Image (tube, rainbow, N blue to C red):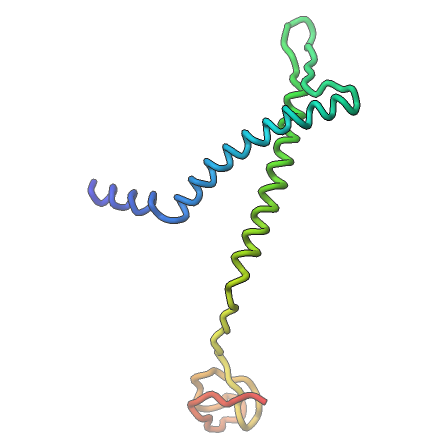
Length: 142
């Protein structure tokens, strides 16, 4: 049981899990802001421009049930705004993260045979193509 708790502690306190938890909390708060923006700004603006009521609903038969199409449209608008803003933020964060990083040079796995000029393994001491003895140190390519 002690090992299980230790493993859970390591999992829960990893940077990725904590970052994800913070992201979910901020995302919830951001969604509330977008909902308020849509309800208090966009819906009245649409109503003022087109005279349409966005918070509409339609009754289904005589059952007393309603289709809340206005709430659905509001939810779609909220989703589009949240997705657009998160896309822009993610794109900006990726750009900021890549500014300070230098591209690492890949380690060479081949070298040039000084005699037949074909690529051979970096640790080869004999060329498989021309069977010449190749120096151990890599030869500079022209």
